[in-house]
Length: 315
Image (tube, rainbow, N blue to C red; front, side, top):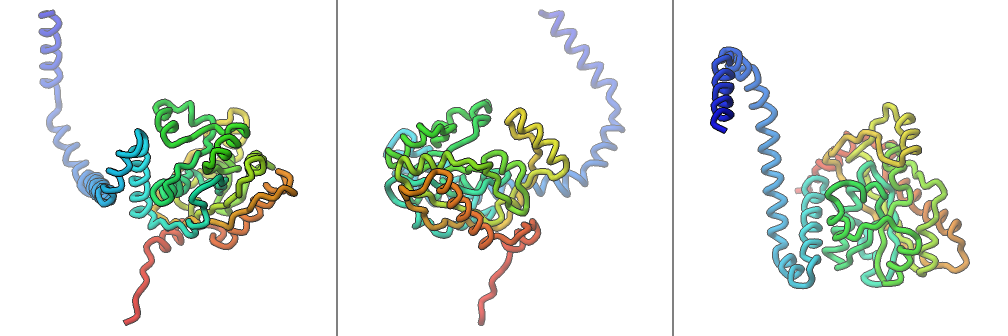
């Protein structure tokens, strides 16, 4: 043991002895402007942003104390929702228009257009938890359940792969389900033209009919400008996805664009409609919302100006 320690000391001595201190000084001199100009400001911004989020959470401390006293996971859900609400408000100036259209009780199927990352769905869920006291059941792609470390979180926030039988059971227990019929395919391969890519899926319509639940369409303005998938090589990545069913197209963004979620009018249960007809009706409603609330094609710079535009008051 002593020989090993002595050998380590000798090796460390050799490393220090052979160091070129002039080279080290030159490297420090070379990279100091980069550190000062870019790294430190970014760190400062991250700290400030973290402090702002903390202040929003602290402001909701009474709500959180109440949640922690109700149930084992209620406090965790309220804490997570408060974080996302704060992040949405600070980074995107987020608003939800028509929250009152989502029922305070009873079943409902919420469908939404899937951005590259469904961050707007997280924001909607946060609003439902905090202001409706309802924890929706989220339908997630199967690959999510293979990501290490996410199992407990997915369980707490009620994410499920969502077979038709499971969804009907959830709805008949007077719960809300939120899903995107386009799924990962729409997330990865739609673009700034906001093309809906449902591939004739109607499972959600079958669930709604069997549970006699309304379908409520949601659309978030500029969700495709917040995060985007790389357009180069899109056909190649789509071919790979269709074979392995795993998202592989690179994603970039995180832009602080203005985001507003619009809640559409509920499509009530109609026993005369088939699942295919109901799915088409829901798709048409969502397309109309996109045409009404989104400038096509989407533009990141324009979405940023909407986030930081100032409304001057008349004196």
